[in-house]
Length: 597
Ligand SMILES: Nc1ncnc2c1ncn2[C@@H]1O[C@H](COP(=O)(O)OP(=O)(O)OP(=O)(O)O)[C@@H](O)[C@H]1O
Image (cartoon, rainbow, N blue to C red; front, top):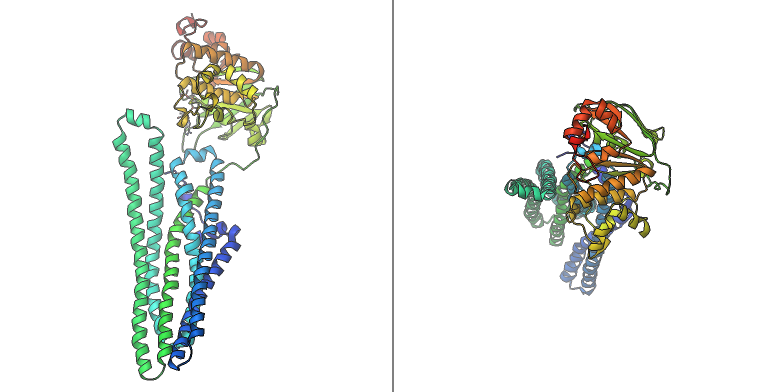
């Protein structure tokens, strides 16, 4: 798991977290609780009416009044019970919704460094499975504890009123059972936490497997992956069964205590009737109360047991909410058409991905003026993609400064900064949905004319014409229904539709065919006339047309120049040009061998 770092485990006790979630719905919850109490009260009045009925029978009086009262109470009990149940369920669902919305909003704003340390599948389980557990904890445990507790106290008070001696006997039994349950409860909590953690691990395993099913199949790894997911599912089952065992034991202890109380009251009460201390009507009423005590006791014990599961879920939700996130901000407007291109400069930037990882940038310095194309080249792992991540403020440098238009990135509002930039990642992610959804992702307001222009620029127009559903064609999970080259061009069209003042293009390392290669080269050249383009370059065709090339090696900039200058002046670049760049197949370009000759 990530997992949310245990050292960041929430220090707020779960009950306070629960109250925080419930606060917005406190009045509906109170209404539900009052309705439940009224239901209980209608039930509580029944034994008293029953005593009157027995008295009336004993004294040859009419029992019509008592019968009518009992019928009225039974109907009221049912009606109030149904209404109360609905209001409580409504409230519980609202609490779940509130928790889900809050958690989703937080997770979408997570800092990328927090995402690096997390398993998406586990985070998903926290949003789906853990929040669902709040439903029960709101109704069963909060209301159960409130109404059950109150009914319990009221019932005991009524019992005390009917016969204090028998009440003392009942209380003794209840307290003994309470002690046993107190020992069981922490075990329910531990097992529930482990069960939910295992559900998270199962989500993480599944996400890993389903996200790369082709690779899993091609590697013949289905069996091993299956075992990993099964192991997590079995662990969850084991722990849930353990929690169920302890919960059942707690419930049974409560039930057993009531049976014991019933028998004890019958024995002690019988003796008291025999000595004339109480009459038979009082004993019957008292036994009915003991019978009535069963429900609130079961409710309180159920509430306490349920709370243990809920508090484990609350702790997991809170862990995710403690992951560092970017501040929520209104989306910033995109640059106007024809907005000035951006300038970008790095000054002595030192950066590492985590405190226990080596530095990736050891004082990177370069400056890129507005407009034109700058290519970043260097051996794998030199830190080229990291330059883009820092510009997007996915991470912040440890030392040094990065300026966009002469203003430090930390002085920019993150949404304003990102709205100025178009970013095409190396693996050009395409999201499930239609082609149109993908194109409009970064600028939902783009009109048909703009979309058409972007399609033409990226040479996607002929593809769209070919597809029976055109732009409404579904591209499949992660765009699997598109070819690698098409995915890349969709990602570029998407970035262009944002009218970026700075375009970051992390070139795919895979070879494109001649037509795609030429299309991409022309596109980038076109865009570079009106905006600033930075490309992590893997292609000869890209570097040869770049206005300047930044050569990076092991986290440092070792040279800046044009292709011609660098081939002559920088041995590493000359070697890269000769051996590593993907050769263009287009006839207008040279092969690596001919480059430096
Ligand atoms: N999220 C991350 N967490 C930890 N280390 C990372 C992360 N991303 C990259 N790295 C490490 O940082 C170093 C630089 O990575 P970067 O992706 O910037 O290299 P690159 O020059 O773009 O390489 P390539 O040409 O292979 O894409 C690598 O050693 C990589 O392992």
